[in-house]
Image 1 (cartoon, helix red, strand yellow):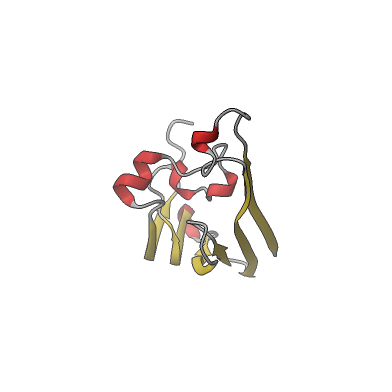
Image 2: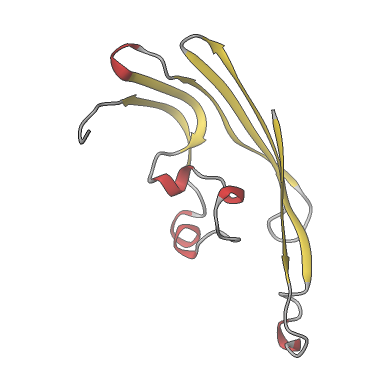
Length: 131
């Protein structure tokens, strides 16, 4: 179980009055609640819920992820079912508070509206190619 407080502070030089609305602020962007546990020898389950404040308004609840991941299946198979960040590149699976940048990068925000989240089922088969 975990709680993550995601905030930021942005300050401007004293003579930069034209950007005063964008700078000189400290804000709490989100409060994220994480729960995870093994549910049996074959798999585990997790839930990630967020109370976020995107545009300076009120905080809104969003269920980011809630999934069951069976990661100990025979022949190196694993199955994930539920709501989760897509495996569409490694960058998509990382929550914004874990990234080394403060805001969502422009290309992902413009083309996809943010990180890609799916409701469904994923099948993985791990191999040792390239090893």
